[in-house]
Amino acid sequence: MSSERYPWYRELSGYQWWILIIATLGWLFDTMDQRIFVLARSRALAEVLGPQSSPESVKFYGSIATAFLLIGWATGGLIFGTLGDRLGRAKTLMITVATYSFFTGISALSVSWWDFTLYRFLTGLGVGGAFAAAVTLVAEVMPDRARPHALGILQAMSAIGNILGSLIGFVFLPISLNLGWTFLPEGMFHGWRLMFCMGIIPAILCVFILATVREPEAWVAARRAAREARERGEPAVKLGSWRELWGDPRWRHNTIIGVTLVLAGAIGLWGIGFWSPELIRDNVLAGATKEHQDRVSSIATALQDVGAFFGILAYTWMTAYFGRRSAFAASFLLAFAVTAGVFGFVNREWQIYFATPILGFATLAPFGGYAIYLPELYPTRLRSTGTGFCYNVARYLTAVGVFSMGSLTVVFAYLGVGEPFRWAAMSVALIYILGIVVLRWAPETKDKPLPE
Image (cartoon, rainbow, N blue to C red; front, side):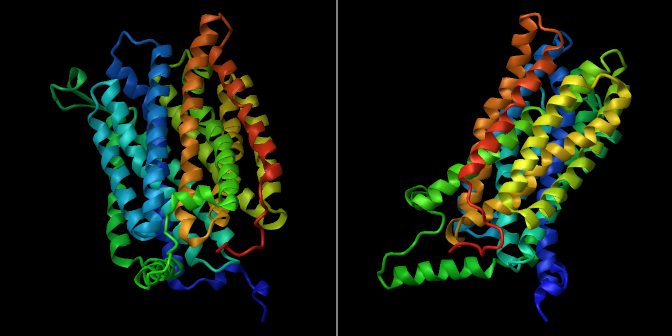
């Protein structure tokens, strides 16, 4: 009987399901950490900057902290992406999970904007490395027909990590504990610190990775072939070679395309989409109490993540039937229209509850494409390096885009433009057009085996 006659998931063995679960949890907890930061960012900086800080200064330093998280993310992606090809996918995934868990927990002890920003950078090192290790591991273990579906599920479940982060914010952000610790302002251990403490939990996953996950056979074979070639004195293809990544015209072309596609989606998400709590607190609910702002923001981001879950699944369905390029084009166009509409025109509390799920659907849909498409652009010896490079080098440029959000807000405020935050968001949303334009040169990988 042809395999096309039964669902893709029936092709998976028990071990392949376990790999999907482990890799998905590694990336899920990664996104949980990101959401904790997004919700805690403004409250943390307002406290460490002191009562004299203005909303504009909090946004400014918030953009700096976000930019350094993304710079760390990009740096970690480059370092651990190469290690994934040289050291192994499973070992690299374990190291990255331990890194982002530890430094998320340490963030709870921040006392100034600069050490808070430093911890965010160090957390970003692990955050950046986890994606490439997880998707490369899954891509190489799964059967060809199951690969896009499995990777789509892995990326869609990242929205569940965001939801967990939102629920942590809903429970802990309004809480304050008087611990009497003299190095803290007024001795208070506020809710945002409790949220970062919860980020330590993913470290438990490292035990299961170490004990149960084997390196993919394709990677083991590539490493063996390189070693045997060296022993025979023959020229050996180096695993994780940056020289080959940029020296070979095919891989160089694919890398430029991959970086540009990620850049469009990442700036749209981190430069605008993840600023929905600030939109709610400082614009839509500007006159409400802080407790009400925090509750509504947590609910709204959870709804945003529910939309994100279905957006990534929608991309997975579109790419399986219509191809990678068509799915990217549709998702970028939708993201542009929805982002500009939400940040430009939502001004009532009741609008938040249906606008944020649509925002999440639109801005996260392209990320389903990155998990599926990027590993398909490279051979085994460069797959982790190339995927990590595309997904994370774009973060350096994304950091500029995020900083532009805070800077444009200040500029529009100086110019006396009404609601400068909204105008800044709508300006940055134009980045999605870049993603649509570059698709003209993107290779179509639908129904093709992984390159070697």
